[in-house]
Length: 216
Image 1 (cartoon, rainbow, N blue to C red):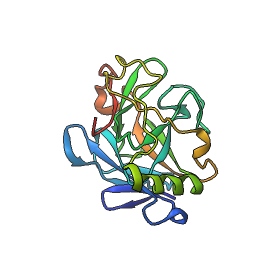
Image 2: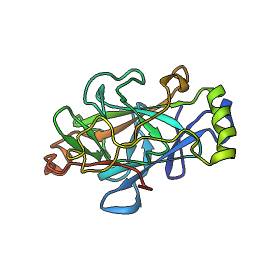
Image 3: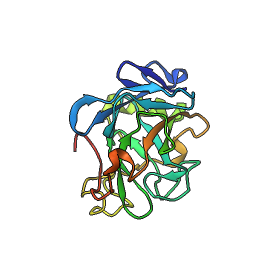
Image 4: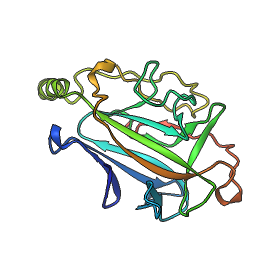
């Protein structure tokens, strides 16, 4: 179960070691250094924000993780309902190298994430599912990393999505085999967001967000 620890939401896999964890920090677009803090929902069905505004997800981890994200059952990357597992063409984020997620594809255009800070009918669930590598593959990865640097396999660059639609920023391809990820081990969390055209009564979805890498 994902837990809040300080300013971040942590997904942990202690059976793989103490450093087998992914931290996701939500930052406000209006104040990039400012953190949008999460609190448990009063109804116990996920997490909500203490503040309103456009937010981005910042991912931090020492080890690789696959992140499957859906909005109301629709895949964040593809806009379709291929939501239950990691698939090809790639329907998930691989981190590293992916470090920032700023929005989602609704099937027609890209939409930014807007924090929902109140219990409301005008909210929608962002479901995050985090998958670790299989123990055998992780052991190989850590051993090879010591020999040749952090990233022994290498990574691709842009895939699937129209670069103009996502602002020209790269979405990183996972060059691993799907079988390297342990799809029987998953940690997940629900984050409540505002629906489009609801936040502050002004949002129209006219500005296309991007999904980027901090270090790109």
